[in-house]
Length: 173
Image (cartoon, rainbow, N blue to C red; front, side, top):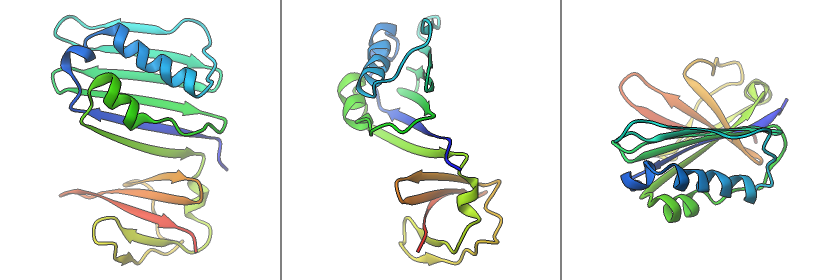
């Protein structure tokens, strides 16, 4: 059962100065809210850490929540948006590059309540790097070190290995 989608966004290589500016980071969150027609419940909460620290913001939404944490010392901003109703795509990469000076933006989506998708029917699993097929059966335990990520009709599974981290792409035939 799909009960919502969560976006996990990491913006790397951002301007440290911009990540310390609560008004700039607030404007990024306001753009997300406006572009996706999200409904804020109550007042957003913001915390400015002592210099040279960053900021943390939280919006309670009728759809769930939007949070942001900035780390000027590593030039990283992280965003977490969870919506319990379908939303159109947000241009995370384009907007975070323009508003925060990000050099790299990583967007992951997780369908919440989607564990059942891993246990139904056969799975086609492909190594992201080599593009070689992997052998995974529906009965394989994909819990624990695997995180289900899904967009539209295709799903992804991120595999965390002891010596490295790699990603796997999963789709139903």
